Amino acid sequence: MVTVVNYVRELGVFITYGVVRSVDNRTYPQQLAEAIGEIVEEVKKSLSIDLKNHPVIRAYRDFYWRVLDIDPTKQRPSQEALLRRVLRGEPLPKINPVVDAGNAISIKYLVPIGLYDVAKIRGDTLYLRKSRRGEVFKPIGGNVMELDEQIVLASESQILHVYPYRDSVETKVDETTRDVLMVVAGVSGVKPETLIDAANHLGKLLSLLGGTLEGVKTA
Image (cartoon, rainbow, N blue to C red):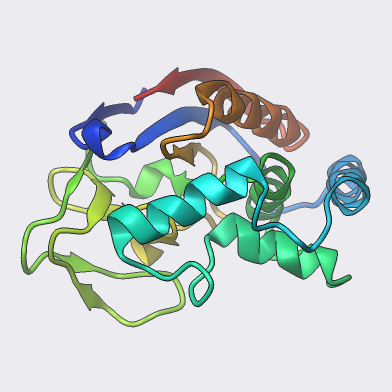
């Protein structure tokens, strides 16, 4: 079981995480496609494009401003960007069954979700911490970054995630993935129960791929 140690809780950072074992990410069951479609339709009916005053969206925007020094109107939190896409009538990106399920849960609960291939993670203990100057991060779909004091999720020798919006190409989920580490990223102003509910709901969706959720923890 993967364990996470949180060294940056004083910044309002916390996560809920769990491992789903033995998924089949090579096929796309109709039941999963329907479940994702139902979530998308539910979100369209329950939310409007005017999101700035939604308390959960507001919490992540405030975190971007206050802690990350990022303007969230120029670089939107990942779940808000996905949600706005859906509310404009565009489909969720279709990547693979596991990632698509994670995106659906992200827009339902309005929280960022990271998904990682356990087999590609070096070590069983991960740390939420500040990056050290000169550490290198290889983001999905982007150029290699040299970090300096960013909040990261990392093992002793590998950075999986820059908090709470970028994941590493080194540990990305693909069609060969069998065991999935799911991480729901929280910030001050978001209830821990929201993260727990999101993780458990995602575990249920991944059970449609044959997966078994080992349990959910908060750090």
